[in-house]
Length: 445
Image (cartoon, rainbow, N blue to C red; front, side, top):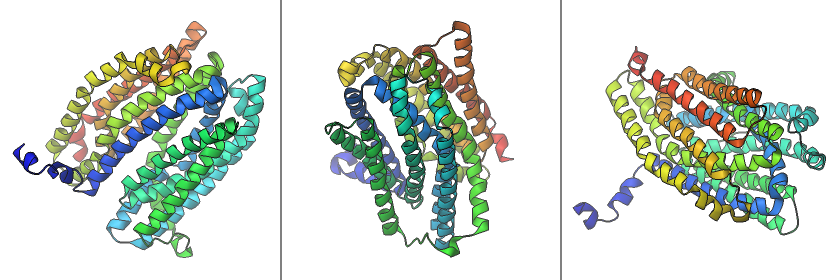
């Protein structure tokens, strides 16, 4: 305390004393900024478009989610392998990994685009749009498919920035892109554009992120990507071996949200999708604030696991994280208690009475998901990606089975049922992770 009075900047310098801390702090800051951008975007979009038109955009946004299947776990792989190559000062390996990743993403993205264009009519029929909205969806879908492929490339470039040790800059590029999307959309709305405003704004935003990522990569390294010498089968196999572990869990998770949206559109109505989207995104933004604080600990757990021991130290880190999660309970309760007032203040005329109740249901699942996060990171650090994949599968299967069972039993659904199924999936997944984490000492042998 006395040191703080003598030197008020002591803790500030200590906070930014290492690159890891800078990256960690930037993740928390940008997540907070992303929440603010989200808070601005929803009432603006709903004001200019209304629930039905915006519901069409959110429904077709599922295509962007499916397009992420073309990622194949490459983004996480790029971060890891680029960081390793930079640590060993092997610029040749770095260039090989990056070129192989970009080529693979281009091929997989093109395949995804062909599937989207081929299945255009069945995709639109899945959502059971009214005739006038189906016409809008018909012309919008191919452009969203093209945007999806481009998004894969831009995300890979931002992953390179993160792999070069500047996750903070990658975060700022991402957040800047979100701000640009909202700003351009608002400008186009005032020019009497409709849904095409969101499409054009998203495209221009990703073009800006693309340029920013390229300039940052050039500033941070002498990396040469487009070179025939970077075509290497060994590096390609190494990249695929790691990315395949990441892909399974991502695949299961990506299929979950589109399934929920499709069931809402078919059984409740497309106008209810924005309500679900609001509570789902806000609840997960709340989750991300705490999750991002845990994420930088993964390298530390990996280092400890690499020594072949220090089990007590790993358990000590886990216990501290569990205490952090339990400390969040009062804050989450207060957030839910005041959620009705906050949603009304935020959305005003676009406020829906369903928001507070469904948000509270999701908060329970979010907290349980955070409780399983320390175990998830520990298992990943110990190379138990199979357990992490099973946890994702449990979450998705539980979610889908509960929704389908409720539909068959009652003949209809409501948003509370859908949100309850999401929370149940979170709970069951976390129970499994906590059970598996108890066997950590055995994993060293």
